[in-house]
Image (cartoon, rainbow, N blue to C red; front, side):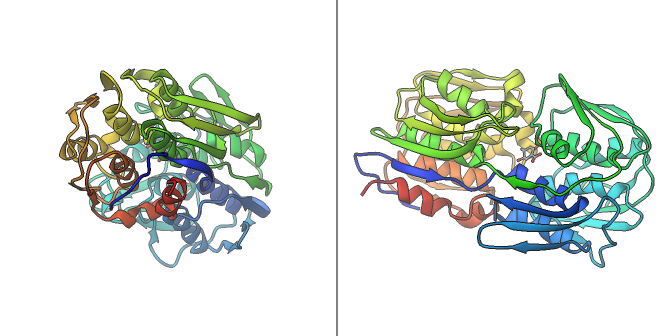
Length: 426
Ligand code: S3P
């Protein structure tokens, strides 16, 4: 892909698609609620459509209308046995959250996904769900998909999770919805809390204290009207682009700024980025408009508590770091190795091909900024966030950049290239 960019940089306003994590959960909890859940701002990316298709196979009717999505819920015990294996596509969130829901049903099911998803670790949910009494197993015995789940009654447990993962936490909490007593999860660092916030709005008794979330078995959930905010993980590509391309000034409308997701904002500011929040709406899921202006960035160290709050943004933060003065160190981010691709490897390999001075470490990357980038052929590994990150890097690279499987952006952002072009002043 070749991007030509005028000397005016990126200019204009954009509304990015809805938050992926919240869109998935809206469908799942809507399916388990009594009544019709109405979702505006739903992300129509391939991942969230996988979630819809899985629930349709379990008897849930959904209507994808031009301005909203309707989920006709059947109540906590209303799902029916799927006639076929459930295909989660590329989506780890679909797989791990649905597993928690399926473990306590009174029917059996099987889950699979695409080649990338079939490589991702499922032991992290098999262990805690197994402790709750679930009969769940990896069919090939390698702790990966396909999974076979024989639904049965579950017990409430307390689980000390070794990883800060919202997918693991949510899987356990969802299993806890129908368990015989309270279920709690403690994480090493707080991961995104959309499950806690949204399930509470559906009427579940779910409490959070520090890094522990506790759910009490529910009698019923009640359908909701949900306005999904723009996805900060999608906004991140434009934030990074506007910060590094000289002359840029853009406004991103209605972006979710939940404190468990706002690590990108904190890091950009710490790197010297000019990023202002406007029109802040303090709702359960807070949102704001972001004004971003081209900035001189400097390298920083990123690690510890903040990592779960920006885990999906680290590929594009690595791109920003190439244009920052000094060294950026990313650590405590070993989870990047088990995302849609090994993002530590894919990003360091691709950026090095473009001329960057960066290296892979055991739990992150080290990037020495300041070297000019040039166009190259880079491998996205069909990972949507890697492809979008390389597209941002290409804006500042001399010559043409070819990204393998550029269309993989459809997973989370089908109109990404159109929206990027819309900000490039002619
Ligand atoms: C997600 C949680 C994160 C994130 C993923 C979406 C979610 O994964 O990387 O894109 O919706 O719960 P982990 O739970 O594996 O950290």
